[in-house]
Amino acid sequence: MRLLHTSDWHLGRQFHNVSLLDDQRFVLQQLLDIVEQDAVDAVIVAGDVYDRAIPPAEAVTLLNETLYSLCVERKVPVVMISGNHDSAQRLGFGSGLMAGAGLHLISQLDQVAEPVMLRKGDESVAVFGVPYCTPELVRDFSGEDVRSFDAAHTWLVDQAAAARPQAVPAVLVSHCFVAGGEASESERPLSVGGADTVRWEPMKGFDYVALGHLHSPQWRGAEHLRYSGSLLKYSFSEVSQRKGVVLVDLEAGKPARISERPLQPRRDMRVLEGAFSDVLAQAETDEAPDDYLLIRLTDKHAILDTLAQLREHYPNVLHLEKPGLYEAGEARLSSREQLKRSEIDLFADFYQQVQGEPMTEEQQAALAKAVSDLHRAEAEQ
Ligand SMILES: [Mn+2]
Image (cartoon, rainbow, N blue to C red):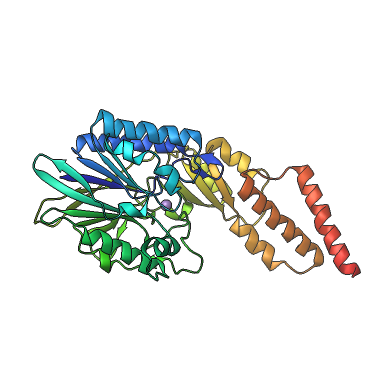
């Protein structure tokens, strides 16, 4: 039986105030194509289906269309668990009803020991899902003195392992942070302080482990314990990652056979670095000017309207950094005037980063006045 493992769709995500819905629709179409071309028997989504607990309406529509294409039009069942970005209750709505149509939503703890049995001819595969949950939830559910993410996860995995049918390949789906995994900037930490990781060893007895949460594709501990990675690059820290899906062939009594299929984004995410004039010159021959860009200008002097000029060639410059200007500025931090100047620059850069647009002249004037008033008040104390 051939499964397709994907995760971290984050439908409805905004990136620097740009909706990625069209980009998500574009790669989900490729996912549907892979399902057909590679004769996939079932699809596993390992959590973070939506980006937010209450997703935008368009994201719900996209998920609805995608699931209909899979379950109804292609008769390919889907097993989906909730991640830390999803609302377990909302995602789980109607799960009992939809199971009959081939959509298996696992978002509650009492589902962990009840495998979804996938069948194809006389082959069967048991799929267990561990939705994302906090140690507190597992403590309440189990009655055990569970204090850590690892203890909670191990307890749940043990429940699934104990319910495993004999002589049938078993798959575990989990949304968690396996210790030692490579994180990106677009994952929301599961807990503050880093006590959110779990060990991979309790899961190693399953024939395949479909993991979600980390956005970089990778395996942990053993090759059959895998993160498929997110659907798209969701931060500039991921520019060099290759996003895709994992195909898993399972046969009773044999180790899983694993292969990867890349997903080509509608627009790639890139970082360009160099002097302003060089970046502009390069734009003339750039084959993908619509890509989402972070541009890092190395110029040591200020240039007017850089963003507007860059956007004439690169309409999707989402972030502009000027490290050269900081270097030059920091070297001259001698006088009171310079200090004020640098505060304004810092705020102007911060404003641009948050708003995606530079400050207007009026705003800059208001800011300059506020900063100098502050300095005056300080001096008069
Ligand atoms: Mn995620």
